[in-house]
Image (cartoon, rainbow, N blue to C red; front, side, top):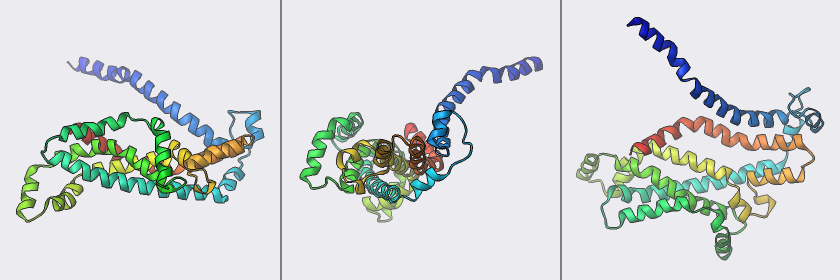
Length: 282
């Protein structure tokens, strides 16, 4: 009996070897390009041309210093931050208010309305590019940060409702009855009880909204033409076009453009996993 257990214990690590191999391969696919971009920023264009996969020798910091000391980079960071903040506030506010009746109230057409929101996931931004631009121009929102934030929020609402609804629906109805006995209105229950209990889901949708808005390229490209209004993805694309001969400088700009979203995601990754797992269970 002990011999069988010993053999099973020795065989278990080898049985998981393909899984580990695939995991390491996926990590390499992600890490290697990022490492190349980061290290390339510490080299000169001549070094990269002479040895594309070599390590920095000597290490050059001028590329990063030039980007960090340029006013355009920080202006683009500010624009991206403003758009992400506005879009996130709208997504969380509107979606939570919509998910509440869709999860707690019984009324005719509830599931049909929810189905319409799910269909919103199938609607690509590229298809709506022309009518969206014409609408924003008629409203006077073209060439404004709000003109980018509003469509981003609109496209983020469907997935946010899908994540929030299971959390709100799984809150025990006894809590709502107890709150009603204490004189709490429906909105009071939503604000004081339901939102605090759905905090994991709220954190998840906030994180997803911020990252999605920060990395969005199509909407800013569609709405913004003034360089003073550009977001960081637009700035990175324009920088690589204007400095296509300065490969090291482009790599440095790309690295600094990735850092805010990457750091934010690394700190928030556990929240995303917890929130999405709760939505799947619901």
